[in-house]
Image (cartoon, one colour):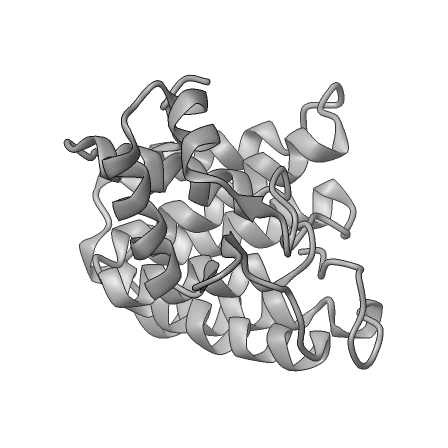
Length: 220
């Protein structure tokens, strides 16, 4: 498997960074399921590296809450649990904070990139999984612009807590319109409006999310 990974994770140098980024992507997209064993030898062969960077990557992901480690059973993908309504509310708060932090730092190139992702949402040929991927890249680009490593880690963990990740449930035109309003607020460096629009955008799915624990991902 190639160690390429989405742009929202930034550019890493060491092999352990690359393995951590690749594993994080596989976990967040659901390619690696909760409870699935993570064998160091298998992962080393899969990524074409030695056991050392794999071991370091697993320790890093354990600190992020994405991986668990048992002395006897070894490492595994962390279980996904929790009340979906509560997680949507937490996401609304944290993502609103990310938007407010990103607003004063947004550059024209960032605006163009966000607009590019948003325009892709309207492409009729996109499959549901491709649509979810574009949506995720849009949101994670804002987290990255916020330039808060801690917040970025929290958002990775939160998105991971939704089985399959938050997905696009609204009509594409509605998501496009709401994203467009958010981009405009970010472009004029209006953090207060960007935060409010983000919270409204995320909380808008609450009536579609089942109460209590469940397997359905919150779709945004």
